[in-house]
Every structure is written in structure tokens, then in C-alpha cells.
Length: 316
Image (cartoon, rainbow, N blue to C red):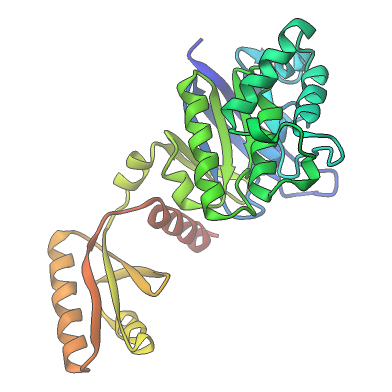
């Protein structure tokens, strides 16, 4: 079987919605053993999609298969093959790290003869060996996320589904968490993760971008950015208010958006890029501005995300 997860025409409409779908006609084909990112703003439908994939929620229409099993008809078989970590994973604060793992191993029907070994494996995998006796409620935010991941993987699932797992943790813990996900994939696990962060999308083998319940595009980050109909120029000059005014009034710039103190400009083609950069340099010089950055830049997932959402808003 080629795909770990496949959806066809997946749609969900809540009873409170009369016309709009939470998600509508989602078609996905996620190969085995990859890290797949479901990307989109709040309210795009990421959580709804993952809850259906995890058999926690029934779809309104469409088909979903996990490892060849139908989510609607064969939910029990699927639950033994997946690990699911919702946004608010319910650890038991009064239980120790090891006791939480034992509890979830029992729920997932890990045989008693294998349970001790699986718990030790997960403690080592998440680097929590030293904290086995510590109560979960006394862990830091990043360590709680690691424990939640260990609990979701304690039964050795083939597919791991994580809903915004790194939200609300510090940058170091975020990086460590993504290293753990990469290690899981290297061991043959298919990982599906939702995220609002474009730097995390860059780490995925394949990405699907959701907006208002619809799947706008799928592919590797390289494939998605290669389809962009423009080149990118990065600019940072002072005073910044004047920089924005100049950029807003200049011909040849298709669109732009801020990233930190810099602006990322979309310009059609290499020749136009050279002309725009020359015009910007002349304008900045004429206004006696301090130029910190003015250079061509690599197209990123953030550029693709902003462009796709802006295009959708213009169509609606």
C-alpha cells in the first residue's frame, strides 16, 4: 500500500452551520514514512481534519483510509495503528512521568510483558529518563509536550497525528520537539502535524495549505515555492515609515509583506528584480536613508502562504 493516509472529498459540516463547511472536499494522499505538515491560520480547518483522521470525529461526507482501513467502518483497527496528540493533551498531573506512560500503555492495550520495555524506550526517546519519578504537573511546558508525545507513541503506532504540538513552548523546546519528530520518521513512522508556523512547514517533506476549509495546494516546500510567479527582494531601510511609503508607491512591485523589521517584495522576473533594486537604491539615496538590507532573497513557505491567502481573499 503506497499511502499511509488517503482522503477523497472529505467534508465536515457542523450542525450549527447551515451553509458553510468546516472543511470541504479535502483530497489528500500522504505516503508512508514522511513528515506531512498541515498548515493554515486559525479557523482554517486543521483541527477538524486531524480529528477525523484520528477517528475522534465522523466526517459529513467523503472517504478516509488509514493504512487501508476505512475510518468510519474500521475505527477500532485504526486506533491501534495511530497515535493522536490533540492540542490540549490530557496528562495526569498527580501521576509521575512513568505512571502516565504506564496508564496510556494500558489504555492502548500494550501487552504486560512488553510494557516495561516500551516505557523505557519512550523515556530514552524523549530524553526523560532522569524524570521518570517526577510528577507530570511539575514538568516544564516543553517537557510536558515531550511526555505527551511519548504517551502518544507508547504503543508503537505506524501513524502519528499531532495537532499544533509546539504551540506555547519556548524556541529551544520547539526545536528539540521537531528533532524528535524527525527521529520518529527515520524509524518508519508517518507523522502528520498541523502548525501555524511557516518555519516548521519548511521542515516537512510535504505540506498541505488549508484556508477556510479548503485545501489550496499540496507538495514539498520546494515544489510549492517554485510555483510562485515572482522573485523576492528583501529590503530594510531607515526611517522605516519612509521605506514603506517608497515601496507602496513604486511600480514593478506586485505585492509585499513585513517580516520583522524587513519587507519582502514580490517582483516578476530577474530583469524586473534588478530594475526594482536599482530604483529602490536611488530613492533611498535621494532621501538620505540608511540602507541595512537590499538584496534578492530565497522564496520561502511564508512567501507562498501569504501569496496564496491574498489570492484567495481577492477571489472571494
